[in-house]
Image (cartoon, rainbow, N blue to C red):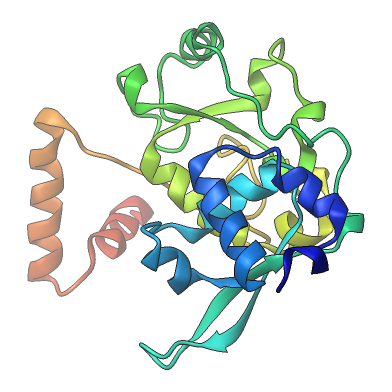
Length: 239
């Protein structure tokens, strides 16, 4: 695909992006017209949804379809392409803003430096700010730093899991209904009715420090009984 074949409204947004990760996908799309998840892996990015999310957060419409068969695995893989310029949303031309250190400290004070999904207390350096409702659904225009409840603190593992789930959720990618996100586990794990549109309930637990011994005992018991740790925990909780 030649640069002149790309809608000038999309190119105008692309030219504003300087972030390295988003720039990698944008440049590949401008040159080739499409970019698979494997192409991004080859470029050194092992979490393609996060890369695509960076581009979307800059206001650039991106679509993803699983319509290519991998030469490596023989399985269908996702392919990213520029979307319809009519899907450009107002107020996102400059992309996602960086949060100040002062705002992060406000959230740490507000939430007690707890990871939103596990409720584990972590050092602030391990926590990152995330919108409760995905940025691609509501955008920064829906939030301001006077409302800390619109944000959550999560660790890198949770961020990857949330990003992957939202990348594969119809509401986050197509419908963009904020009220649906607001009752999703990934937005409000404190009280939710679905997990990415599926009727699921989750309990995320971590054992740290001295508590690791408790988990090790559960794992050994589960192995003796031919169960997963999760299945054993459910049985114990059902008593």
